[in-house]
Length: 167
Image (cartoon, rainbow, N blue to C red; front, side, top):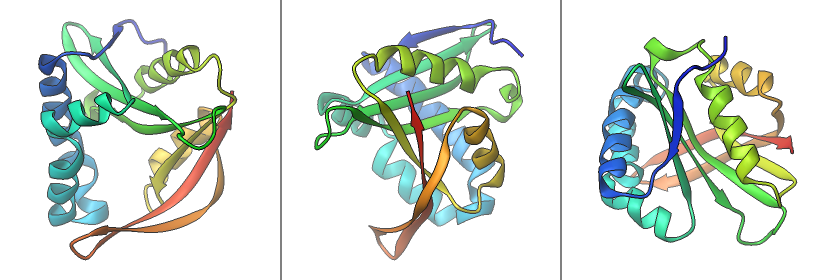
């Protein structure tokens, strides 16, 4: 299905607030069964408060927000790889459950690919037990490279696949 909404770059505190609100909804509806409520809250506090989003953006991250029918339905973010000028990381790609299957993720990825004109590769981390997202990423042209377990503090780990797409 073709996404009929609009995608905008986020550069203001109001945009950070909107992403933070969306993240809370999406993470609770999707990730609590995968990683538990405690880790969801920990990760939201570390990476999805308006302050954390602004800090990441100041360090070079780019943020996008997707709107459909006047409502924010998803968001994405990417960062250049500091060690490799032709590589970037898809840091986040999240769509409300009610908006999945309508081309929102594809539209966000297409916009990111356009923004990455000088880069050749886009990588991401995805929870190894998140089979629906893994299939979606594969449909978007990503392939699994390897597994990676990353300690994120307070006794929590991210047990992920690293996936990559050639641009």
